[in-house]
Image (cartoon, rainbow over all chains, first blue to last red; front, side):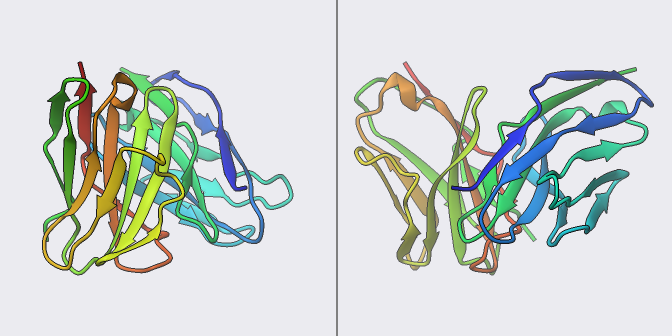
Length: 110
Length: 114
């Protein structure tokens, strides 16, 4: 079945550091890929998405590229801020409801 | 435009009691999904409903759990005879489309079973 594997957290970075959160997937067919973010005490919000191979999703300085050859969708940001502290979830959709990874907690310190 | 509303935010039950979690989707959304978030386990899909119909309940435990989305009113996730292992955050999400790729999540209900 479909599945998503994310790097284990927590990740702690200093402000303005470069962020990478790895995500790989297993799926049949051609899924769409997503990153969702969960701020403390809130529900998940869609951060970005990509619907086909080589597509790049971007939002709020975050980027992720759909790599079919490596079945990956790594999340990157060039310079993180304290306000980026949250839990990040990679997800995919195929012919089933969204399948989520376990989440990666990011803490950014000033 | 109000978002997805879940209540209560926190629910405490003793073992053996019933828990009812409510979810009002965004206006115009007729597709509702329930997910459970256990510590260190991420979100697990439970059930997908359209108005008055259960479309996919492949993630629902076979016993004690049920869900409905009536023609009028919120979607309800019901857990009978709760056990400590049911303690988790339960999230509802709604979507305007059946494919459900873009989900709008509520803030969740934290269920604690004593």
